Image 1 (cartoon, rainbow, N blue to C red):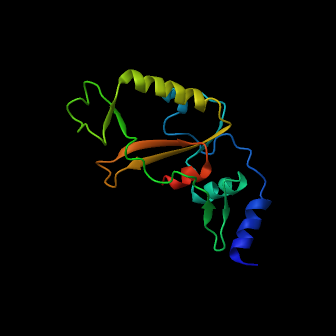
Image 2: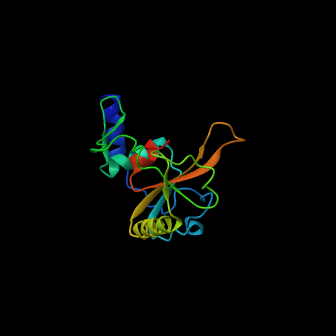
Image 3: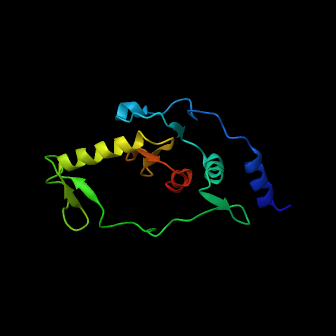
Length: 157
């Protein structure tokens, strides 16, 4: 039996985890960000558990040597023309507005946020990753990524 066959057999033989929250706590609870949901929250999972979830959820398969293989769909690249920044008193003179930094009104952002929060409330499970942007501790910023799919949460790292 090859290593990947043993890994595949191991994953498929394990019972699904009956865990509502997979970490002791989130850095910042979701409800503090206005996110109200009954979804099972998989928070800050490592690589191996995310691969297990992806395979178990049917999001991908394991290839011959063990890597996760997924179908990314039709749109796989970065959408450079889909970058919007709220134009308000704080950003009006500090952002280089143009083709790549498209302004959005605060009202439009509020409507999008409301739609996003309503959509999250309907999900059965969510994957949350609390990460950092930037390599130097004195300059890095906190970033929270919320995904529906385990492999998306794995990809954002």
